[in-house]
Amino acid sequence: MIKIICICTFAILALNSVRSLPMPDYVVPNTPENLERLKNLGPDDLAEELSGQFEGDMVMSPSEIAQLIGGNKNGKTGLIAERFRWPDNIIPYTINEEDFSSAQIHYIHLAAERLMEVTCLKFVPYREGVHTNYIWVTGENSGCWSYVGMRNGRQQLNLTPNNPEVGCFRLYTIVHEFMHALGFYHMQSATERDEYVRIVWENIQAGTQNNFNTYDAQTITQFGIEYDYGSVMHYSRTAFSINGSDTIVALKDLGDSIMGQRVRMSDKDIARINAMYCPLSPRPPPPQSLTEFFYRLNNGMNKLFYNIFSRF
Ligand SMILES: [Zn+2]
Image 1 (cartoon, helix red, strand yellow):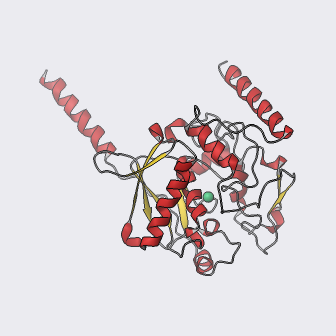
Image 2 (tube, rainbow, N blue to C red; image 1 turned 45 degrees about the vertical axis):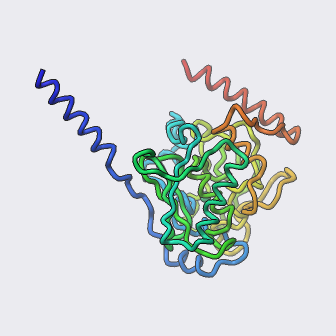
Image 3 (tube, rainbow, N blue to C red; image 1 turned 180 degrees about the vertical axis):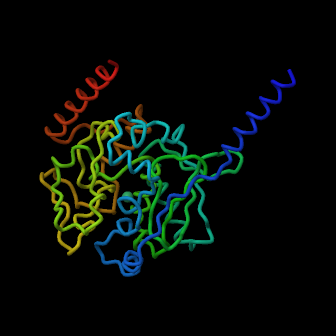
């Protein structure tokens, strides 16, 4: 009996020590060139593309990157995997206030409010002892970046301080980083993106081609909503350009706004968040074109066949 009690006590202690381990830090130091450009941003530059992480602003472990690039057939990482989602749609967050001015702190809260206004998400102040997993917003000078989806424990989300609507402090750049923390990747990583955009490989800086990967349909999903040039998660058309010329060219006219915009969440961004977190209400908007109707139909059929045949 004593032996069993000892084993149980040891097991509980071991479990607690695993739980209390700090989250591994996978942030990569930004390059001097990017840091210089971050100080002198042009009007069309996106600070998140210059932040030195995977695809610019996504902090990922080497194994996550390998799985994404290699194509994870088990659907256990990335946007589809439910273990990376915030339970009950509640996202506790806290701001490292000493890094920011009161105007910047206001802007961070405002970004969370913008997300709450159009979804069932609840951003709440982190409370020690109540919340285990939470976002920790910091203001280091390395750019804007976030982990993708909910991790274990405190997960850092960084925004280099700047004036409101400049660099990392564009309101919808903050929304963009929060959307990574919710579990969204970049729009141009969509499985079917080559039907919608042409990547101009010769204009891309050497060594940054990995930023233009697509991910397979078992890792990420579009939730039956068509590709979206106007997504707040889309790169700019000159992302990672070696010469200022376009690296991403639209192939279709979907009647959308500017590629790489950071002035609003598109209707499809809102629909995707609601599809991931709030499937019961509100529902995604009706398809806005015949193309989107057939796209959703095709997507639904693919999902049905996948669910049937993956059982064999
Ligand atoms: Zn991003």
